[in-house]
Amino acid sequence: MLTVRPATSDDCEAVADIYRYYVENSTATFDLEAPSVAQWRTRLETSVAAGRPFLVAGAPGEVVGYAYLGVYRGKAGWSWTAEDSIYLRPEAAGRGTGKHLLRALIDAADPAVTRTIMAVVSEDVPESIALHTKVGFVEVGRTPGVGRKFDRWIGCVYLQYTIGP
Image (cartoon, rainbow, N blue to C red; front, side, top):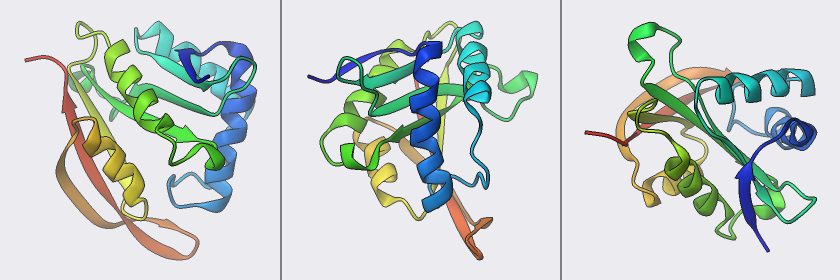
């Protein structure tokens, strides 16, 4: 049975493991080195302290995915905008887990803290673009060839979800 719940510090090892797979094997992220478990704990603490959700999905005792709202562009004028991040264990993909998790993330967002959620998605991952579109994100732009990984240039697709008026 799949459940979605707020992440705890104990979940950060599984979160780090999930993300490491994408750093090492895909262009879903432009990170070239995977963050440590300690760095994930800091991200969790930072998100929670900012009033933004950091969720995990899975069965009891097992984490198959995570999603959180992080800083978007790091300037004061952007403080009501968040960037989402969502990753699943590869074997969990295609089962509706991502849609359930992303919907829960949106529902957990406090409109007093977050007005807009931005998704910055590698053009190499049409599944992620489709996932965001299914839950109501709207494509607002594309930036061709702005990232480089595995010796090639990759573009990004920008999608936006507005929570409040």
